[in-house]
Image 1 (tube, rainbow, N blue to C red):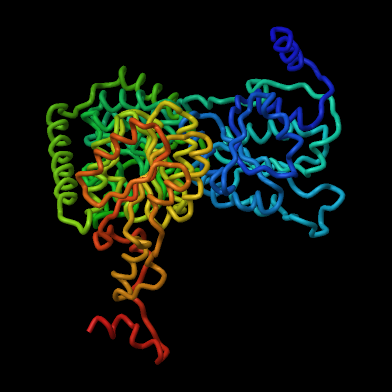
Image 2 (image 1 turned 90 degrees about the horizontal axis):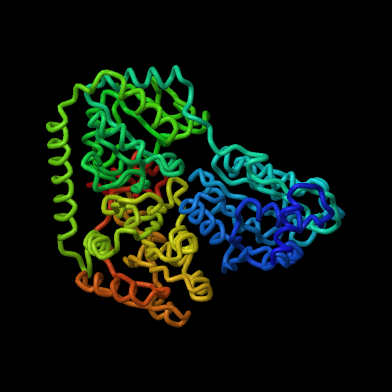
Length: 591
């Protein structure tokens, strides 16, 4: 064993003969890759054969889209770029949705994309597709291997861009280029990429400090970038020095500890009214590690909360995101932690904040208490069989503090935004602004692989569950004790709400007739429970946590208790001109 380790170490310091597959796998090992997700295929079988000896675990899924969501969540929890692979053609194209989701989530990822062999490219052969063109708009870069001698170099480039630009990169390699031989030196990551960008331009930092120290009502928005940079503690230091309330960005509820006196909760759809009413008052906004997305700053609860006249200081690692959606007074291109540390350091030597600390803390405490009471009151309204808010309240109360929670997109999943509170980072794994259904469960599996000893729960609607329940087989096969909480209202409820509000209760395609999800789970080897009483939720959760086996909780909730439309701003009351559709015109049916 000692001799084998010495041999590997020597191989990293000089060029040695190896096959392209060996060069790829050794580069993956150098990058710290422990798991790769996908479905077995002939195109990459030569590389796959090396995984066990290299110490890389291949995680076979039931659908390649799931592989991308698993890798996405694994990266969000560990910080290590996820890697996925599939058969050329349909295997890779099945990953489009999850790669697009990771792209909008700014998740580093490498897609190993075998393509048609070089002798047959352009013949429309079996399983041929122009994968580079397909993925061009949903990745940070597409890197194509053109010769066997370039395989390791191209893979290093893929990882370099994935980390630098925070997103997925396609590594496209014709399937015949896994074979052959080359001379290659396996480099270590520090030899070809840099992980830190520093604190940003000193003049911009100085200007930001001047604005903050003179602010009457500074508010901080902490985003995913603060989590990725392990910078949340630095954000807290600034907040405490300024007595500045801290909101978190849409569906990044773990970007600031919820139990901190200055925490006001998430902005964005179905977020915290406490955060919205607070942010509305800001004269200076310090946005750290966030692109301030359009959807994540839209009015909610009829509160147009994003301040129109506040001076915005935006810190982001990607220059493309600065002032992309909101005009800024100061833009700082830098690492969220490094920039926050420097801002705090300079604030300490600046004039002390004029904010009356106790008055501000009492104000925040009051607005948070009012919002918490409203959430409880809304949850305690009767439902048939269960008010979905009550189910969320009971679930969140029953879970241990270190639980990782993934949430899908949809009516109940989005309502969860107001109820999910975290005091640790890397606990909230949400579908975010790509908004695809079927995300939460495979993401939960990836999170469980990242932290095998932590409880992991997926919050998912019955519509989205139909897109991901096949992965229960993966959970059973890999012994991943994820708890799927399926909120079953027998409908695509977000769309049903649109049909209620805009189409006079004409339901087309919104109702779901599904099998008994608990029985299906049991037949697949998992635990299965059907719940139709709110008081049973905590009891079942406790039992499942103790058993540490994959489980599906089929929770029946009231399908009439629905959240507001996601995009009320993008919908209009219907107008019809043709006689055969006149009865569907809003002016007709409103009478």
